[in-house]
Length: 42
Image (cartoon, rainbow, N blue to C red; front, side):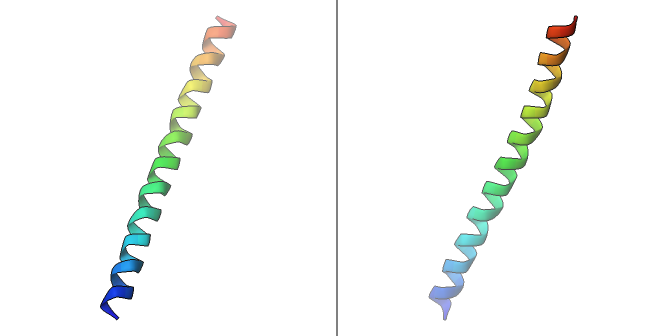
């Protein structure tokens, strides 16, 4: 039982990390788009 719990916990941690990473990437992409937009049209 404990082994399974540990495994699940590890999975959740990895998933949480990946989700945060992806959200951060999306934010970075939006920022990048904004700068590219400003750069092209200025």
